[in-house]
Amino acid sequence: MAITLRSKLLATLDTVQMPTKVEMRQGAPNKNAHPRQKVTYEEGRSLRYRRENCGRRIMKAVKALAPAALFAVFFCAGAGAEDSKTSGPAQPPGVPAKEFEAKAGYCETCHGLSARGFIGTNPMPRLAGQQPGYIKNQLQAFIDRRRLNPVMGNVAHVLSPAMVDFLSTHFKDLDPPPYGGAPKDLMSEGEKIYHEGVPSAEVPACETCHGQDAYGMDQFPRLAGQLDGYVIAKLTNWSKERGQDPNNPDNSQVMGPIAEKLTKEQIAAVAAYVSDLK
Ligand code: HEC
Ligand code: HEC
Image (cartoon, rainbow, N blue to C red):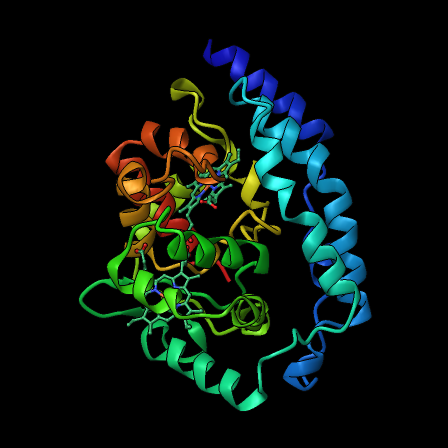
């Protein structure tokens, strides 16, 4: 069984096109642009390119894991809407620049300077460099209470749809160094798990979906530089926090079975590894 999954995944990797760092950065918005003009033509084009590949790639990755072709629907469901948004002007109507800047500053009071993440009572996740498609999904999941967190639930609940759109793309350009602090001695085991998975436990390589450099893509989150305490907590509590509305299943179902199969030690190792990636 393990061998079947492994070979299926290898076959998937042969055909699945994960973006290289260069491809993913090609569309990087101009850092000097006014926030209202953040999404450049190149960015729009690159998002469209990614979207066209989205359905095929995800179908293959997900089919390799479970007989649930169903998931592909969720993944690309938002695609059309975002596509038209990025090919037009970046600024959604109804968000005055000042209001937006105040809100983005408010996010940093918890998520750290430049949204690098912060360790307080609980680790606050890094948002810097995070994929807009993923951030948007999470904000909506907090609003819908599909993703449970009392603090973020309240923060997200008051955001207008236009503000959600704007905030989703805001963090992509920030590039502070990783917060750091994870145990170095776990990193080589983590690296192996990240790139090869755990075939004996039918855990696929993380890079299949999160990318070789852990930059993620679209609705697949970036893991590079994510705080290790946060990654450990999320993988440990996945089934209690994510996908909590059975009538409205979401992308969390793709990650759930993987999180469940990882042992405590494997979680600690892979979390240490990704947290150190720039
Ligand atoms: C009062 C503190 C606080 C503030 C302010 C705050 N957050 Fe959060 N945020 C959190 C915590 C805590 C989590 C982790 C939730 C969890 O563990 O599931 C989180 C998680 C998130 C996530 C999910 C990250 C991931 O990797 O899945 C997103 C997206 C997010 N916040 C966006 C925002 C945005 C945008 C703002 C500003 C409007 C904001 N947050 C303001 C505390 C805060
Ligand atoms: C088949 C694709 C797939 C594979 C393989 C995969 N993931 Fe994920 N992962 C996802 C998706 C999709 C999400 C976002 C789920 C959501 O939107 O709720 C995710 C989310 C996560 C998150 C939450 C990020 C955050 O900011 O809260 C972590 C941590 C994570 N994955 C770690 C891993 C690790 C470690 C591995 C390898 C052992 C792995 N993933 C393999 C698809 C995958």
